Image (cartoon, rainbow, N blue to C red; front, side, top):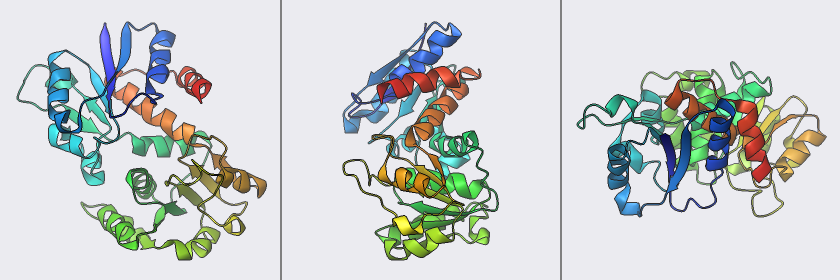
Length: 281
């Protein structure tokens, strides 16, 4: 039996187990997906323990995504983002001195969520609200796909740091006009945008939107990373003005799909994984 799993603390709320288990069932795989909740200081021991137990791959969630960089060999994208959410042990099985490979599939989650809704990103004007972990993944996904990205954040310095990171290591995001700003200029930026991503938690606990409703328009594609609730106020207001809307479960789904395909080398049964995910939401 192949074993995959999730490292996080806490992990009791995670929707990854039913999503991945549905994929194994659909493809008739002899595999299981389990959760692990190490203490914050025990991440390294947890990764080594997983290797010793023969676990094939791990997802990584809060609070370990940044610290996981110290225990893997990250690919270029994960290193640029500064966070790992997927670990693959396949190339490290035969040599205990070789660290496992680390990836960030949140970027693919954003990109593939838009692609599923027939939204192209190249040459588009994009606005990302938020500069935390989800914001970083969204900004890199959009910039690497050829969009000009504006990052809006309550703390402008954090948005500026993200834009700087987008432009290093040979990435040409800066040449496409990557910019940063505060929330006070959000109205004007969204009015001029083709793509909008809410990468904050606004809308999760209260029926609020991080974007003024009057700035939304019919030529916009809107992804809200919030997936609980699925139908946020931002998405409702965007849909009312004719915009394309993408709920946060699509991003969650496709980051899991990307991890599954990296671990197994097989095409993921997307429909089965999506059905299992939405059944739990």
